[in-house]
Image 1 (spheres, helix red, strand yellow):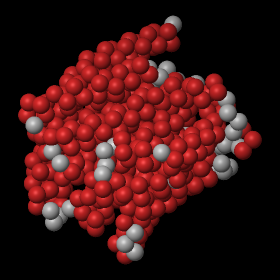
Image 2 (image 1 turned 90 degrees about the horizontal axis):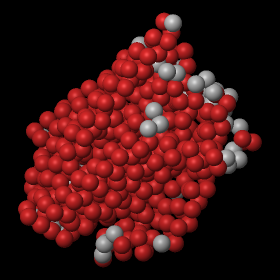
Image 3 (image 1 turned 135 degrees about the vertical axis):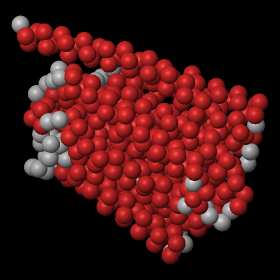
Image 4 (image 1 turned 180 degrees about the horizontal axis):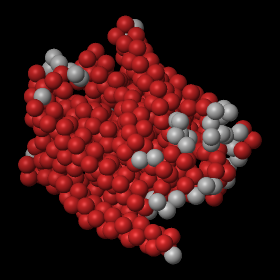
Length: 456
């Protein structure tokens, strides 16, 4: 357990390790919940199954976006309030998250099941692929509340000083998902239905264990059933603070839709399957970046709220360096051994392997800058500079990536699609570096100013 005194006084490096490593492990494990489905479906049901999973992903990411918005938005506010020593308000924020998620979860389930066919039609699926998507999505919609709770409560439990417990919960859950995927898909032949059931059971385990902790006497931020009434002022603050995270995840859904559209236009369902494999592979490294960012968020938020700007500066620099190193290692691995990465999902389709390997080497150049972009967006969110964080997430997609995604294929065909993402990320990286150099100067000035006031 990490308490307020340690957040205020322990070395930044020590806190970074204690929060970031469990956060990385937890986020990777949570992400594996969906990647595991792709692994089993790709190996058992082939390229059509992969296409169905890939076309379904934007809708799943929309649910994920809402859960992360609630979790990051509330945990950001909680860290700031704890830094200001206002524990009572921090607990009220956590209590409101429970009520909000119940309402949103019910709405997603009802609307999702009612409009499954319409959504599949909009996503462009046909024939066997559309049938597979319906089997998968209806169960995902039915269990949406568990996905929301698991993603929203994870950062809150970490902010409660229990990062290791949150990590253990995620590990138990993903092991369960792997076992159930094997039983349902491989042994029982339940296909997409089995994959969806396994995923929902795994997320339900996370939700129940994390909620049980926050409702128990072990929690510092303990939620009592009588305190769960909706406070619309707090809900608005949570949503406002979480908007950048929602925008980030929603932009992923938007980009998946856009990629699927241009790939079907300039390529084929096989190209969509290739993109599915690339996206699964990329997401593994992206989750590392998110883990670094989410791990450092309580440190930055608490110390910023406490006015310890020098510690904030150190934490930000450490997270940026770590994000770059992780991205560099990931790029080298994928560039040198793409066949092995692709073989994890479908080792038997030679044509799919050829398309995916060529595209992966281009697409994965984004790893070199993506970590720094994610860390800095989370930094701005952690200090409640919402518009800065929102600009990074939305600007990259609307200003750079979507225009490139729709213009490059006109000139270069399918190859242009693979170049769009690394080019857009490179442009956004330059913008972010200009922003963050100015921010670091402000932190140094605040630190000097506070030291001068204390000196007097």
